[in-house]
Image 1 (cartoon, rainbow, N blue to C red):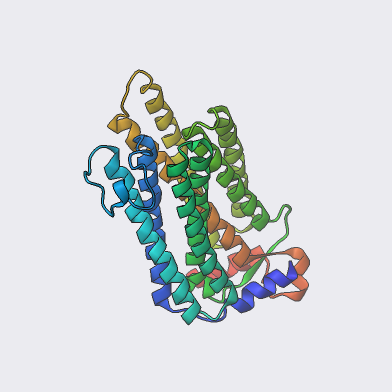
Image 2 (cartoon, rainbow, N blue to C red; image 1 turned 90 degrees about the horizontal axis):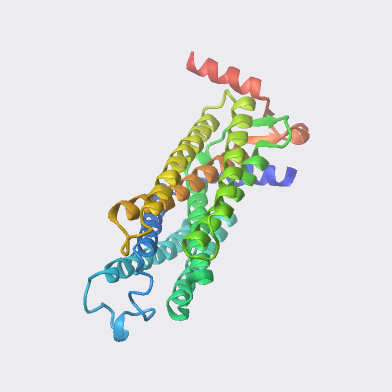
Length: 326
């Protein structure tokens, strides 16, 4: 752990171009659009609208008609192509302007993930059995999104700022707890994808929601209690709790919409809107948890490394914040 702390501090001392950071933000925004486009395909039952891959009908670049599910499926492929190009450009840009090895590794890892995601999408089309391939495709999309969010935070001016580190005297450590919460949310997203694509029923997803609730509340309480004087961590907790509350409401709304769809052949606009919003809410909840996790790793250190690192106790950080406000 001591090596990880010193690496984080020294590695962040080399400033990165604001341009590549803004480009990472742009890539993140397009990734959110891609997640929405994918959810529109699933919830409009448009997954088999274009039976060939990577090109459209009869190996043409464009489908002959933009009607029905074809417009959702083709739009999804177009946005996916844009995100792939943005990710490749981001990795190349990072390699050219950022001297940090971790930044380069993350950039090319994102390229690998987007290639794997494209291949899984093709497998979904060509295989014709969506239960496993579509679930894996949806889950990998969230892992890719998590990676892009992490890259964006790592390139941000906030990460490169020389912030004092706070001593974490409790157990479990806040960073470990935030990491566990992020992992639980990712598993819950996997369970939701499995349910949407018919691989499982709703029960595992409901159990997952209960576990996520416990972890989110526990993590937020620990971070706020131990580091109440740190504005960045308070903001991270506020974002996590906000998106969690929104996601719970969207979950109930999506369930209500699904119960009304039982005797209806085609998905209604209300059903599509609420279920797509629920998928997007899950992605934003994952992003907020990832942000809080990275904040904890960046700003806090266990008490066991305090002797070898410039770590400030939470009380000192709170007093320093009060003096700056004064």
